[in-house]
Length: 200
Image 1: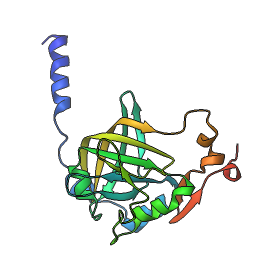
Image 2: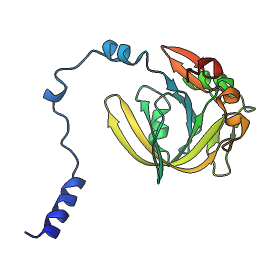
Image 3: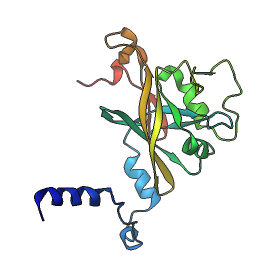
Image 4: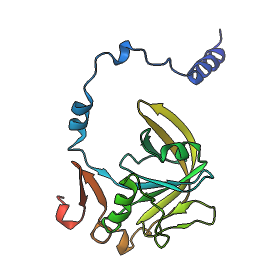
């Protein structure tokens, strides 16, 4: 077999999905409470995800958003199967990821509250020209196309390619943490970042 043939075969095998996890692989595991306790002191930024798959807008608050690539521009987040918004997000072609500052804590709480109409107050949201619902007050937002999803336990991991962004330009005072005061969730509590939290 030639080197070229070997490389081709390796590429083909790399496309094959990994075998599904067996019961044995999950046999030795920590409890949900132990796992949550390990992450309790690990702060996370706060975002609100919005989407509309054709049957009305949905929104949820997430602390799982992170960037994975700048070329192409990709981000990832996860949504719980327990959320009423998850079925719509799974069907949506595009979503809007709102990255929130402390001044937008009301939007964060709105997305985190179940059993309410999160879009009842029409003064705080509107639709982009492309149709997606969004909250203009967000410090920054990213509109993107869903390019992949993966089931992960009781959640779905969603990969999104950024198509459009809205954020203060670099060097603008409003982009500085002293002005924007990023919103952070830590130990089941909302926090703001700023000069008071700077240690270096």
